Image (cartoon, rainbow, N blue to C red; front, side, top):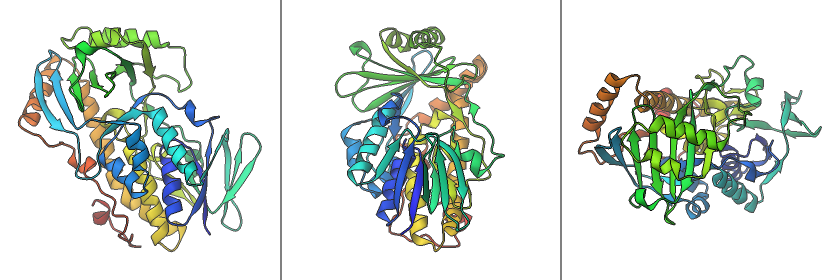
Length: 402
């Protein structure tokens, strides 16, 4: 029986492990952190396509149980004037669902463990090599080793395995702003049930939604110079003040909501330039380790879920690991490239350069959203994984785009 080593227990890792188990491939997930609860409490949204991927491996119900829905969004300009509204749903799944990244990682790890899959914590990857027989051997910081038939890198944007797969791979690039989010109870500014209120401010973007228990969840982007991923010198109180300062000039409720928030979380954001190499030998990258987009589209979690399921399909249907990796690359790369382009465009929309471009942005958004109930990014949320359809060995670009 083929067995896999998976590096990283965030989102892509546990989903890949569950999908591989479904096709008869056993795996062990290795996580550098000491335990899964160490994950960041940032807000994350799983869209319909992500829920569809989870449902494919029967892992959607645990996520449904610990999240809440948002079926529509309302957009406003920096003066608080309505620009329009649209659906956030898709043809498949029940998304989007909102929860914290910490809770999502925990529930996926718990579900994997319930199925008998193993996650070992405190395992920081140090080395990865091919043996003469074609197997993979990995070494960890604690001096231990593991061996398997293939190695999957799901270790995020700062992936260690990426430097082994492609020593010439580009380094992550600072997004130029830090996602800052918070949790507060402020009834004066509660959103309608199952609704995100989104504000295109003069200097940044702000959005909030209200959970069923009455707590308001909000997030924004605070422009910042590059921040080291391990830099914790900026306190939550300082992030709070920076967010207030950048939003205070707009006639929207953002600054008021932030002022009454004590629970603040900030995460330095990075993205990857398009990587030409996702795999080599019996090693492959998935999720943010392969294709971290700018965070504006909010689809990082959902795309990671898709990755894990599609990779398992390819390994199920194709005769060799190399054939499976090649098909996975051809299937996923066009969709990932389109997401990265979309997210970059959304970043420019969220933070226009100057008042003239801001006025033009608002006019375009008003025209785009007026009278339009459907999601303008349907191609993202309506994506469906046909689990029972075999993956052909010589898949081409046209098939990959479907």
